[in-house]
Length: 462
Image: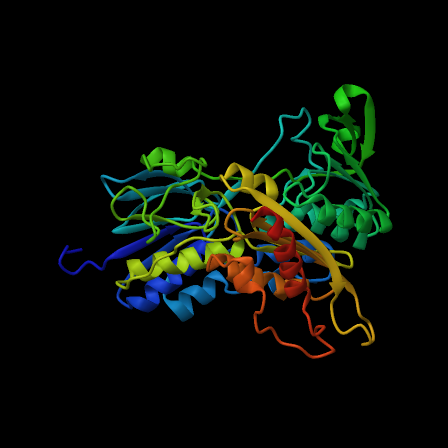
């Protein structure tokens, strides 16, 4: 094709939240842009956060988690999506990427003018013998969820061991109990939810226990002993002193940035080990952007780079990258690390820094914990909410918040997230004009109660 008539081409590597957001926004901004998305797995543009509910059989079909299919991207948005294509090489000087068609077993080379790397994260895996057994799983992609559900449906396991105690593990304990499996959580730290303060994490642990989940803390899995053709597993604990029988093992020990392509291309990594980008989501190499769970972000509270892989962040970063590629101007300034999840009857949320993180970031933090009603005390069905507020002794600035309760948590945490984004102090938050009606909140909302109790405690540091 004559170079004068050749259309500018955007190649996107990775077809989930960040990648397809970038592809879609860039195409909307520039209708003449040729956009090709390459995805290693069979699925693109799906809700990874919905996978535990698919495993639990609350979502009946995997298709229900898919927002846009490859065919819909092609026909409705003019974006060419090639699934089962694994990108194995990036040549920034030649401006090419090389992908392997995993079905045909053939290599294909794609020229690009702009490139987005949105390959996400990879599950951290402990160095355990037996990790490759067919009934040992990680949970990162929709295909992982399909494999787990299929194994439960076909093999009918009775006992599950979850190695790890983060929020994905907490969601999966409920999913497995929903399928009537016996569940044991193995956490090498001294509590589940290590990023949460003990008051909050303790309530979650109690909820798990009330739902017949066994919790083993301050103990580490050291090996997986596989027998009977990989069907029966003994999880070896505490240097061989204890063995825990299991029919299925889920390894849920966190996520790391997928930096393989970045290292091949010579893209700079940040101090967190993830890909470093600027506010426009550009890497250090010309015409190459990165977004999603493979990049580090600026934490707006600490002011430092951090690795916080979350779906909403990936969507926003992809949109920013796509707008800049399409000819617009957009910036992504950072995050405060807001998360929320459900396990059994509890909603659990956090935003900002915990006490350990605040100390490491150079603050002099303290914390305040209160428990108040979710709505007016006389209104039927009222539930308690526990709120922990973390603040700086010197400046009285809000540094973080955590919440747990049976209702009313998920949106209240957003009040704290907005306050953190705007660097508000306890004094500035004390009289926020929050909504009130008996079915929804007491006249003094738990957010305001927590902040004002913290203000009272902060007086002693003045």
